[in-house]
Length: 209
Image (cartoon, rainbow, N blue to C red; front, top):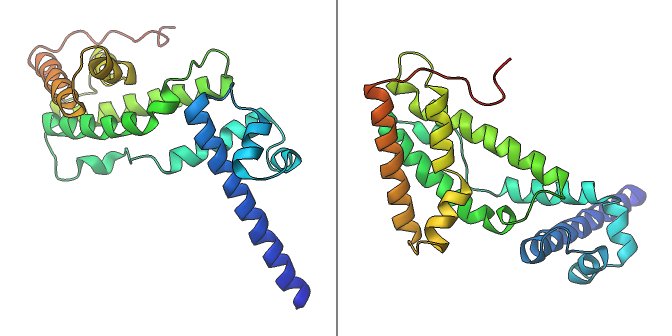
């Protein structure tokens, strides 16, 4: 029995150490970027030895994925429950704009990283973009008897992209509230135009045979 108790203590201590290291990774990646953060930096921030960091995260891929997992688990939610009690597409889109803006605010330190030299980040961003297009389709579905036009989904995705949100704040000086209002107005106007005169549902790039 004492041995089992000691094992539980060791496992708990190991888990606490890992959590402390992950917290250090997240902080440093947000401050400096993944490529500018070394194992020595992480060890110093977590107050552990460098070999301890390697023991928990033997490769940059494992280390980066731990950071992504930690950050994503704590992100503002983005799911179909956003549309509960909202049968109309305009109301759904307005709710979606607010939810995505909250995620942009949360993910901003990591969204500003260049993804060219971080394959894992590029994969993660593609998954996020796919999820965003899927929920945009759910938001706009009530306005169309069939599937929403792919051109509409692509245009709305561009309006809801992080770079659009960031540009309104940083380049045009809008407050976050004003940016949300501007994007909400834009996406609803675009939706109304497509709903009134649905264009040909042209395939998106990459969908062509």
